[in-house]
Length: 264
Length: 343
Image (cartoon, rainbow over all chains, first blue to last red):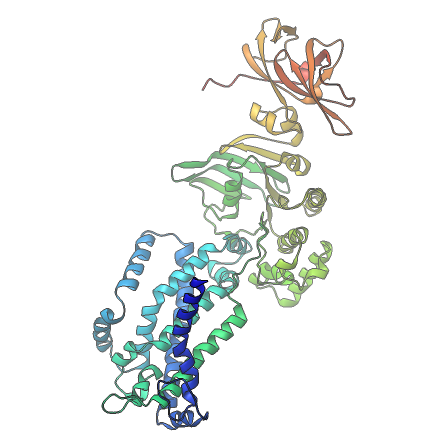
């Protein structure tokens, strides 16, 4: 009983910010309190009226989607290859990938990334940010998909090879469709991470017009760094919607169930 | 109609020898079975045939053409897998058409072929289902249909009946044999079930520990086994192995003396005796006591004690355990082996 009370209290504590996120956007004079005298859509109007706010969402969508597609496609191909083919140095490659993807991340990687993109003339471009985001997210996606492929029985692919399909056609018609569930997880993970990333676009972009939503939100602070709470609340709610939508779509299509169907 | 020849084919996985040098020729149009217990190398041999596995040494010939390094997708084999390996995301029709689509057959022809094959296997009503919605027997037929539709030069079967229940297995066995007789396509069948091998094969190869132990027709391996292993692996119940001693003028079996079989060996030997070649006979030359009697309705399997050695004999009438009498061995039908070397 005591345990349940503790868990319930803890749950309530962590739910409060979420409740605030749902309530504050509709309050004309939002503070950090949790009550709304008379709900209004005024805050949303103000957000959408702000110059560049919609553009920022568009920028976020572009960079996140591109990273999502890039990472998912590459992770499928590489995860498949790393699972099915054994070659000299495979385990070392995997080990190094784990090491670098988990140790050299975020702030530690940003300075070398900056210089790299500077040399490639990709600073202040969408492509530069997309590549930087994808590079950071690819290793984890690759591991998820490699594990996923490891769990798929080989006999489907072997049947396909004997049936006359080359390895590429086998991947395309037999393996890739069965990767759907794993690919969906990776796609979602990548999108969410790219969508929420602040540091990478903040450092790699100069032009305000290219800022994604995660960076543009700082336009709603005044000169001395005080926030316009009601606008930020509305903005934050809008900011969560695409991720939520994507999650629901993927849930609907894949249900996060793994493909089965072999007769044991 | 393709003739297949293995020339000194060997397979090693690291230190483990899965297949010792194997020479084997499978004639065009033959129904040939690779029979052996698990780990005998029969599946390795089949995988080398498909090209999914490369031999460590040796060559593989199809009609005299060296195909050892040819990739699987160019070999024109069709295989029915043990687990059927039906593509779970495709319908039955798409599964059957897959090899045709890959070979760029025009769609109308594909459909015609699919419908023809499906009709001949009575699965026409299942074409729009997914494999997950089919019973084991139906999946097996779809897998067979996928192989048939390709009109392959070689059929390969990897224990295709082992996932079916006993009654379906018998039906499928008869069906397969009939089908192969009609199509006359060289067929290689892998199984660990000697009954299946006997029932289906024109000829078979018996493998043990990666060695080819004997190649021959069902009759040959049954009546003239090349080793005690073959004698005890084939037959239901298997052959009895009895210890005996060959003397210049006869053979000592326990305390009794019997006629000497035709053999060049001397001294201690092992005899392989089929259960039907031990006859319960008051005039027999060996003392016997009944240990157990298993009643199968149409025949009895009777375990008897012959001077301390147990043997199974086949008979139509039952015998009560404890009954004492005599048996006669049909000396001309037994096979003599030298005893295994002491380990």
